[in-house]
Length: 338
Image (cartoon, rainbow, N blue to C red; front, side, top):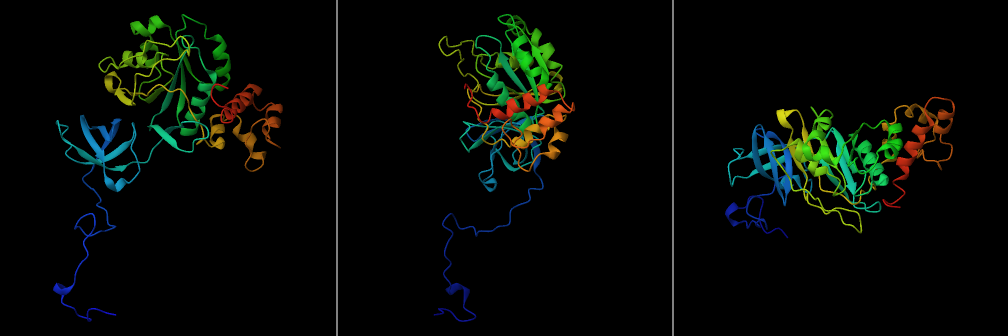
């Protein structure tokens, strides 16, 4: 039954207020044409430190972004107070498309992926040759994540004064992964940074590795003005270090020639999110051989009718390359440490 006629007096109509306020709801969002671009340097409990031109600005995510989160390395559009003065707070209203993404899951059966770093050009995988002992399975997993996310891997082997790097390098030279070998003395006196810097100039490089391998020590030598606390203690029973870096942080190299991103030490690197079809793109000499593979071929050693076997047998690629590919693909089926 109609309570009002065709032309009711507006003063007689009761308007139900919005439960969250009196502002009428709308699907029209502001365009924020005055927003400026910034880069996320670190994230701490909902507050994001961003670089806008030459200023460091504290910002928070706008409600309109919903559950979409910004991570270190993200290019974002920011509005509000961009002066960078103390106690000011800007708003991130848009996250730009990412050129690359380093992701991981807590475990292989965990469907929730975590974006660690965005827009990095390469991934420096830091591994000690001793104290703690190297874990090739972890290196393999980091390589898979790098290939899957569009990052170029760089293997950094530390503490060569305690053990030889030859055995470990035999596993990764066939993959064509560039590598650097340093000693504890070189880390401590800064000589290692000169060698590493050659691979970092003009690039955004994310550093990843177990606690105690010298990752943060190396970052401190590369960016001496922004020293982070290092571990220096490795558990005698587990052979693992204690986490001291608790959040990712982007730091500029001297001369603005590049960026390094220090990430917290990891003890596991789940690959639930990885699509095996993207891993093979890191092996361009094998990609043409997949044209004869059946649809949905996983390219592992148990894959029926995989054409890569014949491709290698015909001399188009080194058998060691196919072995390396299948070893990396197998990391999704084996838990780290198995």
